[in-house]
Image 1 (spheres, one colour):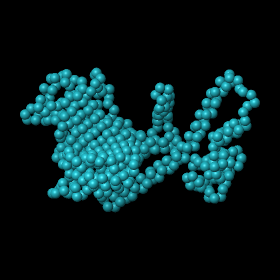
Image 2 (spheres, helix red, strand yellow; image 1 turned 180 degrees about the vertical axis):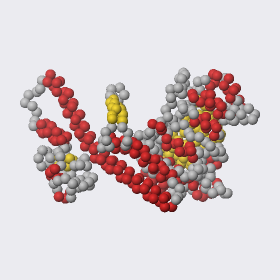
Image 3 (cartoon, one colour; image 1 turned 120 degrees about the vertical axis):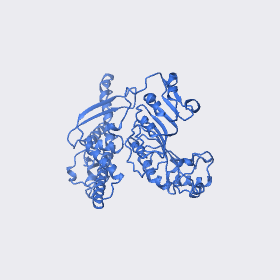
Length: 496
């Protein structure tokens, strides 16, 4: 079947409806292109057409399809081709069929690619204007540089370095692991007009391209070597701690069978726990603390290159906490520190994240570059709402489930917090109330979100106001529709 013109819907032919290729990538027939009503603009994307209609080149791919279609319309051959001849022609027949698929696919993706590149250009230009305006304002007022401007400047520098790369390697693989094939290429990139440069920038903008420094895969020397299994070392309060609350590291290490093949350490607590981590840390993949941990404990955690899952609670009154391991896949931090939050965008493998009780300054998160985070729980104070929404928006493109600690209403919040303002700790059983949370979340780009959980309290018990909770969840449903399941973790009515 011959392709048709998208404007007049006539089949392309070799005369009046001859396919013409426009500079923007779209294809029109010769008759539509000569229509004065177009006003020398592409009717699809409204780009200016500077050339005369007669000067636009033919779309060779479509012409070939028209010629093949004309041959098919000529009727069947006078006699049946012999079986041997059919066998010889089979490769050519398959080639023709594949060629048609390629042309059809290119007709679909070329306009989309042109539109994406135009958006990339507009976004880069807008970013440049913001930086120039911010620089001029700071030079005049002498104010401090904002976090947003610093992040934007860093992204622009990364883009400039990316355009200066000289080598490019790519691997293409089919989805079928059994019969699928793969292709590899290692190229020496040409000057900036090379078509791969905008592709690199687009991959970076989509969060699919990251600097090598952001990847900290475990080295072979730190990987676990031992029998398969999930041996767990669990710290027992009565047996592993002395009367002064010190962890008896020597006694634990003397029982070699208990920790030799352990890849998971749970309920770790007690003074001096970091000494145990220095010994068994290289083999651990999971670590879960019981109670709050010190900065020295987290310094030992930072050096654990095989760690994939971390659940800890920091001391709100202590500072000097180091960075988090960047290879983590699952992370939960209570009383999270500012320096720890800054590590999150640099974690390429992170799939599950829970951060609660942040008390630092407002932060702005750039769009995620890795796009793997599927589950997120946030619990922050009322005056940290900007930081919370920025984190949600940064990972919105990949989130499938979002949990937010929040109160049902202002009245319920005030009844639980008579003396303090609404800047309360999440784990105190009194959640912050966000009156416009439904509108704020609707403004975030959450295309893959399937479940929104409103967390009422860490303390057990039913929802304090079931009727108000139902109305609140209905308000969310107005924005998200039926595609998102909105539930309350404490309400007996789990659905809107």
